[in-house]
Image (cartoon, rainbow over all chains, first blue to last red):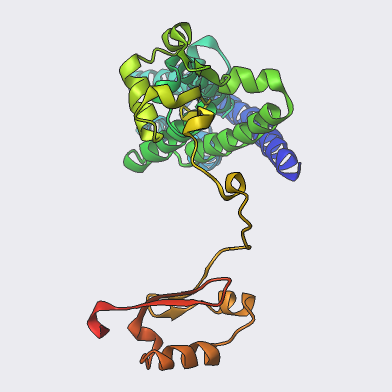
Length: 126
Length: 226
C-alpha cells in the first residue's frame, strides 16, 4: 500500500511541477516577446538609444529564460533562440535597421515555436 | 513538460494495447504491461545516451512515471479481476480431459506443433499422458497429467518420510558464509576443524562446501588443490 502512495505521489509531484514550469516558462516567453516587440518598434522609429536599452533588457530576459529552459527543453531549440538573440544584439549595436528587423521577426518566431512545442495541442502531442 | 507526460501516458497505453493484441506467443515470461514498461524504459534510457541534445530530465520523468503507472496497474490488477483480465488476459485451457481444444488454439494463434513442443519442454513427449494443459497469462504451459501417468509419491506407497529442509552453503569459492554458519548455530572454528579432518588446511582450497539438515558436510576442492 505504501508503494501505491509513493507512485501516486510521484505522479502528482511531476504533474504539478510540470504545470508550474509551463506557467513560469509562458511568463518568460511573454517577457522575451515584449522586449522583442519594443526593440522592433524602436528600430522602426530608428530610435537607437531605445534600441540599445531594449537590447540590454532582451539579453537579461534571455539569460533568465535560458537558465530555466536549457535543463528541460530540447537544447537544439534553445540554441536557436540563443543564436537569434545574439544576432539581434549584434545588429542593434551596429544600427543595421533592415537586418535587425528581419532578425527580430525570426527571434519572435523561434520563441513562439519553442513554447508551442510545450503547449498541449494535437500538433505537439502527435 | 506536460507534453512529455501526456506522450508517456499515450505511449504506455499504446504499447500495452499492442502487446495484448500480439498474443501470448510473443510475450514469454512477463505480463504484457510489464513487457511494455520494459521496452519503453530501455528505449527511454537509450535514446538520450546517444543524443545529448535531449535533456536527461525528459527521460528521467517518463521513466519515473512509467514506474508509477506500473505500480498502480499492478495494484489494480491485484485488486480487480476485470482489470487483471484486461491487462494480463485469462489462462486458456488448450487440452481438456485429454482433448485438444482446437478453437482455443486458434484464438491463441498456436499451432499443434507449437503445442507439442511446449508439452515436450514440460516433460510430456506423449500427448496421451496429458489430462489438462493450460496456457498461462505469461505464455507458459502448465500441464496436469492423467492420474495413471503421475510419478509415484511416498504418500501413494504409504511410506513415512522425515523432514529434509535445505542444505546451507558454508563455503563458496573459498569464501566462508558466516550468515549461514550462524543459522546452523556453528562457527568458523568448527568448520576449520571439520575441513582439517578432511585434509584441507585453508578455506581457499574449497570450491564449495555445504551442510544438510542431517549434519552431513559436502565439500569439493578447487582443481588446483585437488
